[in-house]
Image 1 (cartoon, rainbow, N blue to C red):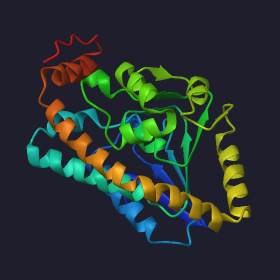
Image 2 (image 1 turned 90 degrees about the horizontal axis):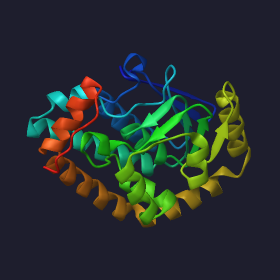
Image 3 (image 1 turned 90 degrees about the vertical axis):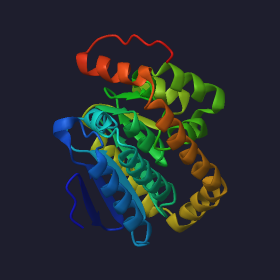
Length: 260
């Protein structure tokens, strides 16, 4: 399949999906969200693929949503389209009948971190940075961020992480259970290849049955959270604090929030 913002390679029961906007830190614009939704839905119907590795082209996994898109998608119809793609993308990712591995290099932030957390296994290079940093632009996590984060660390800790929006190094993230392995610089590809090899050499059909059983129980909750995230994000997009957060980000200054 031909895509503009992502690359997909399939061979020997393994698929590799690469975010392919390296010139803008692999941020996700509307087209990338649509292509990710289409790609995950395509993979969902391809049982010959048993492992999916998700990574970023260049030096960064994904810095999250495209700030330029946030500035230009003020139209309610545009916003509804964005959230519909997000919902499709996350639901398809969560229901993939394969082991999903996030291969994190450089940074995984905002929506990029939400997608990484939606994977079964997270492997990060030692010098990468991870952040659920929606709060910095006056927004709530989307892309299932609330669901995936609390599944990893529990509700009390998830609240603190979302409210603080801190940038974490991989060792801190590992300590909290947000990721599963930290590797030294230069060994990310080989380490992920080893993980893939172990899964493919295992009775992987049993592995995938376990994933299906556990995820099926949580699917209604994820659907509800995605709906609530979309409704909350719509409200937050209209706040003065969100506009201030965006302006401060572009102007590279400290935000001056007013609770409005």
